[in-house]
Image (cartoon, rainbow, N blue to C red):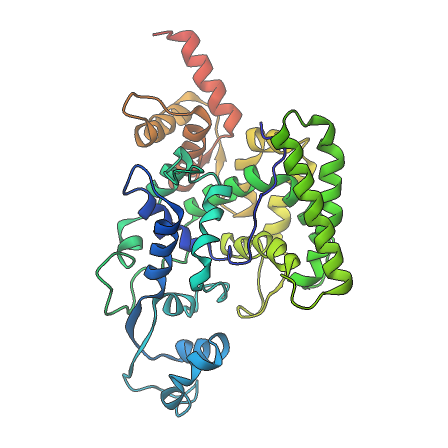
Length: 398
């Protein structure tokens, strides 16, 4: 069990979860990686120029989301064509990520990566337990995520540079299995913050802006510090507590004074607790270009069991899949029989086992639960999967 479940280095660029797909795919290609290689490859991949047909949704994206300099490059074409005018087939050059972000199916059209994000965004994969710190190689959770990514999804990020992108799979759209795995990873890695933060958000009947609710974080951090300071058992634990306190103080100073020239620590801290949950489907954005949010029935259905849980570990073990079944309206059937659980576990084990035949029980149970509820409409909680394995071991010790 983690000492505290708090992200250590949230960054504002950690917005679109779909960028994790090419990052994890690239990390899987070698046994070890380094941050510059992995991060720069991601930026090069998503910023490669592609040729696309100009559409009304691209026109709107160019007008609203691009910088003045970027917009001027397309101004001669876009300014002559109203959004509601039927367009001739006109080709333009855009970054691949701009094309993906302009898609009308995306709930948020923000989160474009810039060059300096090469050393920031990959830490999201570390915080979610997908990559190993130091070697940036896949952890078992990363293998689980990779198994949920189709070949068509990652095809567009390979080399050589794609010259034509029209139609096909949008990598920034998440499938339900991908959403569930990433949501579990958020709760496991940042659950102490999310539990208290979303409890406050549920009390908001109207929409809210990111900067407004970012002011909740200093108090939340201090509550976590107060509850866990006495549990610190190492110098690393004490260092994490001190860093969390320093961040709380910096955010509070920012909300009061907003010092000129200082890094906006409030936005760095709050954005990764909001934008990813738009991708996952637990928050809505009335305007996909504006950082303003709305709590939904899905938010309440998932978050209320989290709030009422004794602690994060208890929620993970006993309530996660039941809460996701309600939050995502999956209409799954709760089953605890071996005939349901063991085949799902066997399937997950075959995906995750090491060359020596080992696989962590939690990771196998998580992947098994995700596949069961999304593929056959039957769910079981983590503790029930572990109990089924223990029962089998007693019956068949070999």
